[in-house]
Length: 365
Ligand SMILES: [Mn+2]
Image (tube, rainbow, N blue to C red; front, side, top):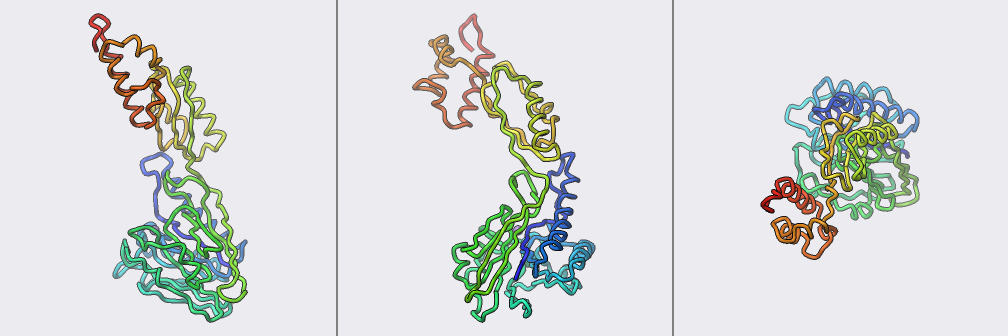
């Protein structure tokens, strides 16, 4: 028995709101879902498992019709889905009464229910969210019957406010596999008999790394059977960290070129999280607005510090406020003595201010 497992597609989500490429990102989400159905045509699984948050918010009838059209384009594959916290069922919601295609089973109840596929000797268990949050660990007590069939638990949760789970318990629950959703980073274990496929397409700047779906196979071998799992990445736009080392020679123009080159190398349609490190010329004022026009930059973090000769300043200002300031931060010498980056940044901001206001006539700032 072969299955494709996905979750957290978040159809209708518009990532990076306010940035020029935001519209493209919502199209990415739609394309990723279409590509998943394409992949199903190639993989030929028996089941397509969707472990919640197919939609970013409770869907409208028109959104349901669109999705159903894709499901009916893979009529030989049984689709089983549950609603997660994002697309939870509300009283009178269009999800409750929707006439799904004949190959789709929606486990819509708030109590565990099942759908059986006798030809596959497989039973899928699951229930849906009827609220934004569920704080009880509802999956902890669930066990599968020992009747020779494969039992799969379709589940959504994994944090404090959304059905906390104890991953160590899944292997002993009797379920052949627990198909989870909600955590957007892929994580799976064959021996632990569980998997989070992660979000199908990255949804915000925290979701770096590969995104895709899981393909699993169950073979009869007594008990819960033999499970094999593999992660299949979907080619998509990514959020990529870009670390740049700044030196005393760096200028806004040279930095712009470095960023441009980096983004050209890793793909100009990807989205970058820029972090600057190192020591800059104390006179250099970084023009963040200008630098961010080098490409699709969603975050810009300047961790650089001015390249003062601290030892020289300490000697020169032995007897004034600046010397006292340096000694207060660096009682025992080198600036390596400030390991905390926030404190280090604060030290340099203060030093900058003191030096730029320093009156050479009075010897006081
Ligand atoms: Mn969720």
